[in-house]
Length: 284
Ligand code: A3P
Image (cartoon, rainbow, N blue to C red):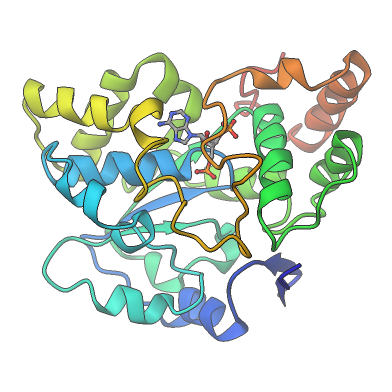
């Protein structure tokens, strides 16, 4: 198993303390920057594709020729400083899984924009469980029940889903923050794309939107080597048994949770989110 780095109470894969400090303290945010921020397994890769295709007005060439981690790189992973420096002649689109308190300080007081995508936490747990089986930085889960305990206590790389969402959603209502959900993308992709375009100041005609919709669809992305992580070496991500682009649906948690697990999850959710009434995420 590859080692995660311990940093300020969290564990992070594929990085170093130096890279994390770059992301938090040194990266100079530009007013034109657009950030794709998520807790892992919430739709990060989907949003990378969406931003790439919006940027090119629906032309899929960039998405088909350049790996997603170069198009919309993560600010906190190894060598991100070098990767980001190379972006000279275009707007910067940047991804991050960082909890808000570790995110770049220079974002505060900038006009840069954050699109925060959240997903139903039960589906995040299921997706994270399967991802942990293929990602060599993560402990191989003994069982779904075991994994769920770690998810609910925040004992996972990137920490607690609850803290991540609550930390970032404090920014709801500020001009440079757009809250989006995986479920919105599923239910109304076109409408959500229009909302994103308006937020980042891009105007796409209907034909360009058609092309974005087609090229960000699950069936196209799962076969796009620049989007499906098949270029990642097997010793880091082993997709021989399970694939990164797994199911791509909302509600798969119903196929994994027992009634008891679901009830316990709801109880913990209510306790942890008690101070944030809007975060029901479809949980009643
Ligand atoms: P599943 O494991 O439930 O299939 P992230 O990119 O944040 O790691 O999230 C990965 C999840 O998003 C996976 O969920 C993946 O299949 C799903 N996903 C990626 N692209 C998608 C798309 N175009 N449509 C629907 N789901 C997508």
